[in-house]
Length: 242
Length: 228
Image 1 (cartoon, each protein chain N blue to C red):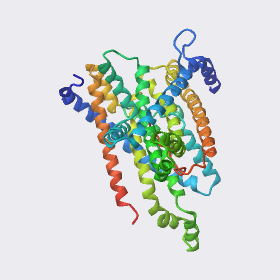
Image 2 (tube, one colour; image 1 turned 135 degrees about the vertical axis):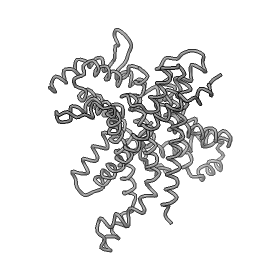
Image 3 (cartoon, helix red, strand yellow; image 1 turned 60 degrees about the vertical axis):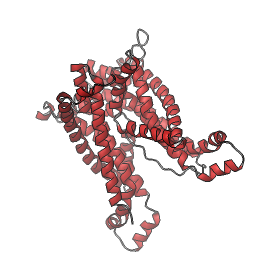
Image 4 (cartoon, rainbow over the protein chains, first blue to last red; image 1 turned 135 degrees about the horizontal axis):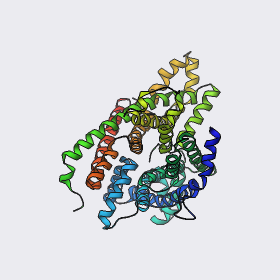
């Protein structure tokens, strides 16, 4: 029985890995990887900017950024995803493909978690560092880029790695909007076969596991390499959701 | 006009939100209790003396932290009938099967995260205190009850609050297997009336209130258990 399951997975492997690619749309694991990279980079950029605003901007903007972070992080990813999906057409006046609105929503969602980390990291750098930089005659921007951010980044590296792992595994949410990424492909294979659900989803889980485990291990290696930072004393435990 | 407030206050939405909230709460409370119990067991295994126990807990935590909840959910939902002995279980055809599958899947994932929070808390107690309590002749059980537990709660409560909120959020994935919780209800309204934005805004507001309430409850607990 299980050898039949292996056969089923083997036969659907091209579909699971690249979707309908040569004939049609790229999908499957390839799309999941592309989505992870795109959303990862976008949410790191958005999160860093939002986090810096929340940590350093004048109080009005700081409150606004902080409030935005609290509200977004209070929503389930799925609710936020659908909400953006229904909101964007009203704002833009035309329908946006689920793939793009999902990218925008997940970028804002993970970005606001990353922003919370960055804000914490910037605050964890001792005030003496700002004062010392000023004493050396550095302006605000060079101080931030050369002195504060490198330390803040190292301080939050463990939680950033956890966040990125979360980001990768929760790209699976996009499958609910009907985008043919890895989880969606597995659902379709499962619906077609209806015989070996546990093997199919165990295989899919294993693939996600390997990807995320490699990311975690890379992160641990970076942490060890950068462990000398003075602000490096935060010990993080990742939380489970997007 | 961006949003139709009168529709949001209509009995159709209110009724659906109440019905959805009921299932969301059932899944949340069921998973939260089960995850706390299993997570505590796992945390004791990781910090315990049994090598096999440590290994098991490590593997469990590594698996469920690195696999999407959606995949775990489908694995449980579609795979459970094959794991049970081949007998007739009426609950497999009942309407509450989705609820059960959602509770099991959310519990499996949440317990791994709860275990990590508790492990970090137990390990935060300085080693000198273990030695001191051994010198005083405390048994391991009394050491946990009298020394670790009072220090543990203030450390782990913020993490547990986070995880409880995450359980609420994760319960939404039940919609993919047909669990009629808040998001599912909102989707249903969208399918009937094409007013997805209003319905989803209502569901989002309910979630924000629910998570806000959990946050306030845990803040109260943190105040109550704060070390003198």
